[in-house]
Length: 64
Image 1 (spheres, rainbow, N blue to C red):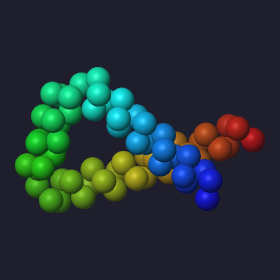
Image 2: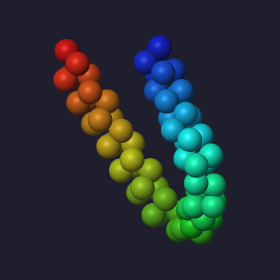
Image 3: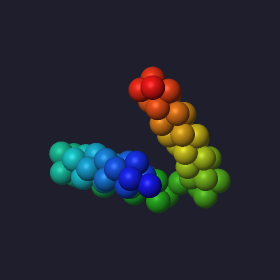
C-alpha cells in the first residue's frame, strides 16, 4: 500500500512540475484531450495503464 501512495505522490509531483514549468503547453494539451473522441481517450488510457504496469514490473524485477 505504501508503494501505491508513493507512486501517486510521484505522479502528482511530476504533473505539478509540468504545470508550473509549461502552463500554456499544458493548457493546450488539456484542451486537445477534451476535444478528442471518447474511443481514442479510452485507448490512450488503456495503453498508458499497460505501459505503467510494465514499467513498475520492470523496476521491481531490476531492483531485486
